[in-house]
Amino acid sequence: MKKIFISSDHAGYNLKEQIKKRFKRKFLFDDLGTDNSKISVNYPDYAHKLCRKISSNSKNMGILVCGSGMGMAMAANKHKKIRAAVCYSVKNTKLSRLHNNANIITLGSRLTKKNIAFKCIEVFVNTKFEGGRHKKRVKKI
Image 1: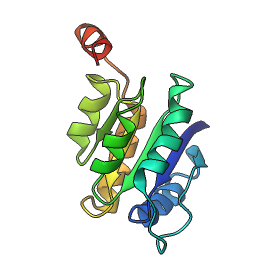
Image 2: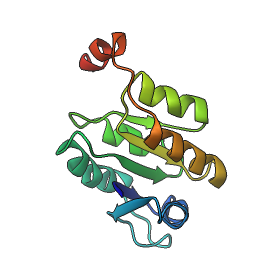
Image 3: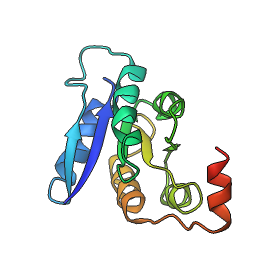
């Protein structure tokens, strides 16, 4: 079973829990918080916590959830070896893996319907990096 790190802020908490429930038979989740939707927290704290786990092993993948997906992506992309992609459709998710070798998917709980988020996660986990001409571009990041 593939291990996936997952984290959210208060705005993303409910979607994070739905993701864990939907994929509990497919993935082993290491949930790095937050633990509820009622107490406001700072999304960078949770993004940084997850990124430390992802950057320590190139095979690790992560899911970050906040209200828009943007804040988590901005915080995550400050880390070396991290390529976090805000995903909102199957097509942009697939391209984030094929061309950019993204290792973290960020989702916006206020902007992305639950079923689209589930599809994006499936595509993210199952799409392999194309390499080739894209490899030299990714190295420049």
